[in-house]
View 1 (spheres, rainbow, N blue to C red):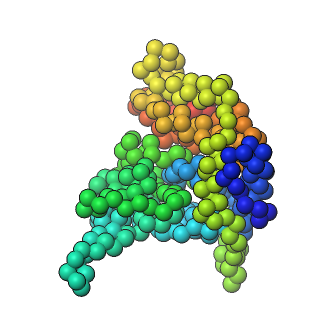
View 2 (view 1 turned 90 degrees about the vertical axis):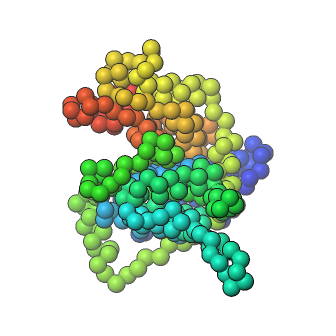
View 3 (view 1 turned 30 degrees about the horizontal axis):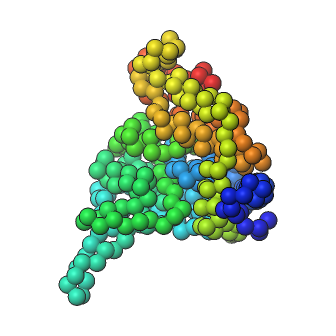
Length: 328
């Protein structure tokens, strides 16, 4: 269990590394389950996102233990964790940091909370676009620029943003370009009655469960390199690209269903993420190469926020999930 996941390019050691990853992934889920009741699909998608070096957007109402979940995952992965509460008056410098005059009358950069391995951007759509955009460079380039000076962020770097349902008052919808930066959009639903009973029992006594750290930063970087080295059959890449293409209503090949209900389809980043997600999904299930089922397993989370449906779909009560299910 404690054996290192190596970054070696030797294919035999990659086989060993995948087998180790399967064991450690299962142990990781068991550790997280000590604190988080249910939500297995949500936890799995967050972990897939971390294994591939992507970012995730959690969509759900307040009070579903989003902060606790991310904090627990950060502890089990042995990573630094910071939470940023987005509010209407939050400024970009509150996130990135700012330059201040020190005693020697020279400028000194004070790092903001964005300088951490895991960032929980809580209620990201409660803050205006100018502040939302401050996250863009960090998410894409893994660096921030202040007063013309570029500062590199520590790797691995993972942003998990939470978003209130758009219908709520006082929200600023994320622009499509920023939504596209998130690998997964994960819908967080209310727990079942049985799960909620378990949550209430666990959180109203005097016991505080503790979790063990199973990874470190270097091991996670090794896993990300391992996932990228996994070979993908030509037909799987083709399937992923054709699936993304099928969401675009302006193409001649688009079906009537897509033309009727979609305004804008997914871009090339969706195809890249489908292949990367399929690789990671194959790896945690002990497979040395992904197949079409692995692509399908990650499709909902990857396409959900990249499809812009039209008024007709809205009027007829057709959701993004309905559209994706139909395309699959």
